[in-house]
Length: 225
Image (spheres, rainbow, N blue to C red):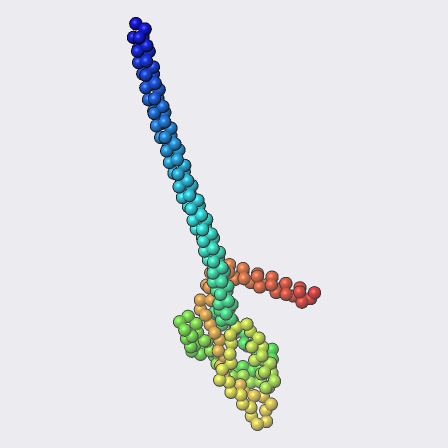
């Protein structure tokens, strides 16, 4: 009986050891799976962070490139506006059709100021200067002393507009006279679209004109000091 009891005890002990070995195997397997899952998670997270960092870096480069492009466009825009203003300043030296008529009418007053007699003053056919500009002509004949005639023409030359005296011939009125006869024509550069251009570009004109006046005032102050 005792021997049988011992055998049963051994059987029970063997089963207990067997059950524990199964538990150890299962636990080890779970640990391995958990470790692999952890490693996979770490590797995946690392890859994702690397992608994000790369994306952020590229985004930073894109932003920097965009900023550089915007700066360049601003500089180009400013240069374009500056060049356009320089063009407008040249256009200001052209007369509009209205200004041309006003100039023609003002000649009588200037002639009277310098004792110059006007024998004839007529507008003649203009010449085209490209597609949108022209040179308008005023044919004249003046009678005056040579000195007064010189003063008169200098007065005309003081204009801010592009004005030229063309094909002028000067001769003495007669052998006994101190006066001379000047015959020729005045050429004036005219731009029919001037008034519209100045209106459309008024903001650019005001901006750069203000900058010029500010710079002129600064230079004047430095010179005085």
